[in-house]
Image (cartoon, rainbow, N blue to C red; front, side):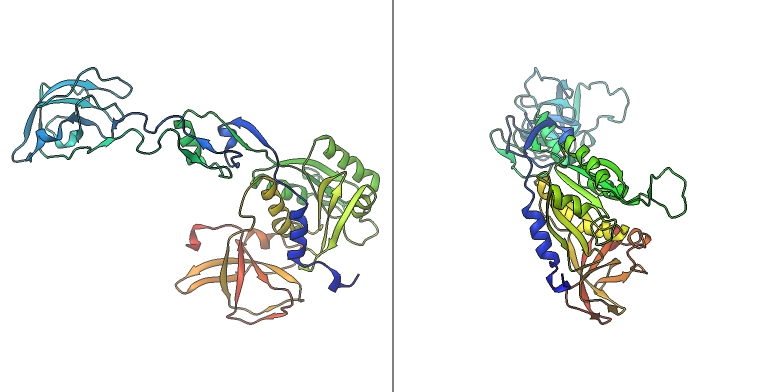
Length: 420
């Protein structure tokens, strides 16, 4: 198979996304819905606020009684009651009277405005705050001032959140205000994580000659968690078809929605994952014109989508970012599927081999735009190059040289405050 026959990154991504679908919905508690996608519209059964209430500590009154009031000419009103938050007012405000009111308390009948306590002569900083017999007000107000009206934010019967909306803390707060304790959301994808290789040790084992610790299993599990999905860690499979099958069977029994493995998909004598897929599933493709990450297998195992990542840690993480991330987001019902991008200027030359390349970089913002600096050695084993990076610079396919001062698309992994 010549390199010209390998899939482009876009062809591979299209094939991966065609193999996965949005998962079914489930009903969960409100907090369990955080970060997940609504599977149906949410219609308000109540108005918000549910009743007219005061936005300030102060006095509910008739605005007409304060016409012309000022610090030099205060209006004097008789205080006829007190309304605390949570109470139901049992007295009506009439001309020449006022009712003391707390923030959030219902506005008593007859009142059409509230004046803040700071604009009166009440010693409102007094800890005990006895109810005065009368109050002097040193300013005028308009009808409706400092009153939150019923339905001002949300009216009952209106759709407040549409199907497809992702629940953030602010949406959770709105739903709680409306008495909604459960929501219909897209189910979290269950993603099996498998690391393969005779050379792998568990992370808590001491190093041995010729061995390395299983970093890929943890990296991919963390990437899955970061997307709001559920990682099902299958552990390490040794380089035998029997070992791989046993681990994959555990994934089937756990009812996973997607398999992700690292290593075992190249052309080496011990790369057994592709062989297992060919025998008990299918392999849609296993080569992509991409750097890092050329050995990339996609297919299925017993009808469960399967993505086989390269073994080198940077290649595995970048391949996950480019393909697995989009698949998991689609299964979760989320959009967009791509990371945000900016056009960034580079100030050093770049040599590439003609494959679509993803270079680890730091992107910052200057007065003239975005600037990008590579994070050093771009070897597929240099994990710290990703630790330092906040972006992946994309060198398009077919480009072998990029001159200093050129602009490249930067795929933003995260947006630190310093970028703005």
